[in-house]
Length: 352
Image (cartoon, rainbow, N blue to C red):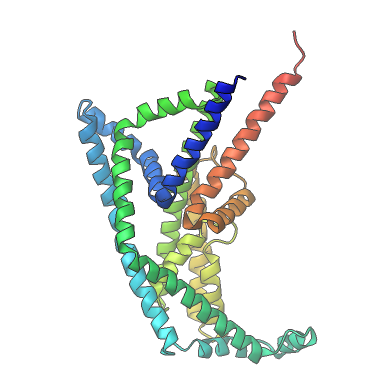
């Protein structure tokens, strides 16, 4: 390799890193512009055929569809969520909603032998656990309220991000096919490898967003409506929490409705507890089994433990966007090693 070529590769790496560094402040807007472009591109193609090749008008109409179906509902939900979360925190802070009383009711329903067992292992008594649980709930509510208030206070940043996303989305719709061909030519891999990676990328995006988000919305809506009918405080907030945790395999929305059902059992509200268990197990639990096969499909499924670990890891590293980025990285990792395995099998074959 010549000095000129080596210098060129170093310069290429530096300017690429610098360019991505410039994009970091608005990576969320760029990420969701790419995701929406992949999901709604079939509509863009339909508009192009309908308008006889007028890509500018087709892209504009597709962006309007995205605004009506995605942006406006998310904005309305976020506004309601911020308001409800703030009200709940105020009630907890002013003791209008006495969390200590509810914790005491649950602990008083526990058998005395459990307290003896806790003392035997030097884990404290019921009064100490009551204080710990109450303080933990207050700290969690304070943290949640802080996050919600930060969302409400960063209105300008939110609209700037939305503007960047919609602006980029228009050009991704209009020039998406040309851009995809350019990327295929620029990637330093064989045509077969590049095609497989791009197919895996788009398939995982569609499966993760189209499948998991729709399933999460349905499960969160069912759980939130059930909480509202049972008179549980901040039903909208808990519905959104259920929608988020339902993206985690194995545990899912049970992280929210199961403790609520246990509390109703502890205070003797058997009917409410039974309704929660029925809805949680037979309705929310079956939604995943009924909707996932037609929405996600079997070809893009990964093992549940891979999805769980990659989702939690992604959320821990980059926040809420990690539920897409985590499984995407895991899927590309599996695809890369699968390609290597196939290539090694070709190497091991004896020559004719």
